[in-house]
Image (cartoon, rainbow, N blue to C red; front, side, top):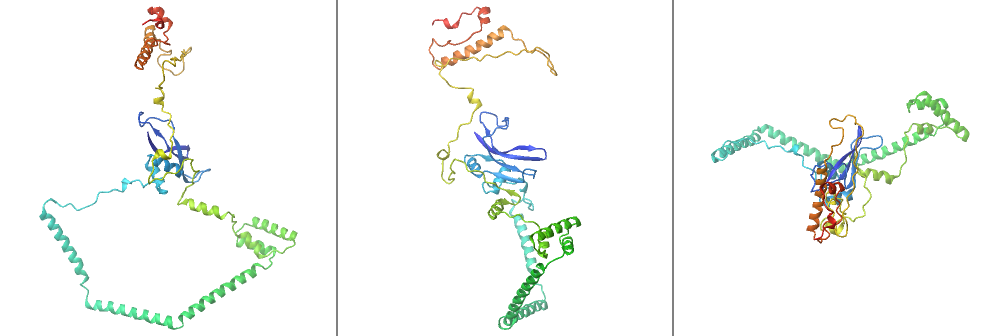
Length: 394
């Protein structure tokens, strides 16, 4: 059995999604036979587009995917790319990035003389590059050296003045002054917010600062002044400022941190429930020690059931013959089922008798029971005058 982790298409038009499944390819059957959507286990989802019910995300059950990878399953390139995000599989090789190296063709590279000539040309180019560095005039060199010395002296003077002079004290005093001025501005703003405000000023503040239309501003002013009048309070500028601010939905901080930890770019990894089977130690383990994999139903092997013939009689399931009593629509050719002659029917039944006889003889059944339980149709006995095979004496 060879198992592959692949994608299976689901969803509907313009909103598709894919399931990550582990289908079964049986060795006895052709590899590309139709499995009609059957699979061993579903490992995750891939939703590439944002729809009405789902966001764009990838959901992988890490434990079950690790299990199938440990048992020898091979992912497809697309699934391998998803598993690479979770560090469960190496990234697939991108063949589009492989390029042939562009090298200069050397004619007759086997000859040593041609190779030596190429090396000499490269050495000449290197000597030219090194010679350009020493071609500067002496005047330019002196100017550069003097400029470097001046910059060094100015930096040394500044450090001496900063450490020994009053520059450090001035900077500290400026920081303290800025903090004090900021605190004063906050106090003034708080005083202005705690001042009472009239109805017209309240409405104009909402329209100018909050950019509300006139109808919405009128309704908000009516509601705030009505509630303040019922409670016996005074309307302040702070109430108008709170109405302008956007509403913040207060959530649990742990949920937000957990949601952010699962986000990676535009993908979300949701860990599924842990399986009952234990997690294997991949360094040293044997698959049989950790898992008991149930045998899958093999339709090819189920047709050949071994059993003891003397204890179990052969059962022939009668087949009902369906005859068409009317001409079906849109059917070309013969309208009725083909007629079988009596000789063909007799040959068919005798083939079954002969096959069971050979099977019993190979399995070591006694001679008396070789023809036991076999059924031969009545018309064959009448037409071909065959005696009952059960009464034959050996």
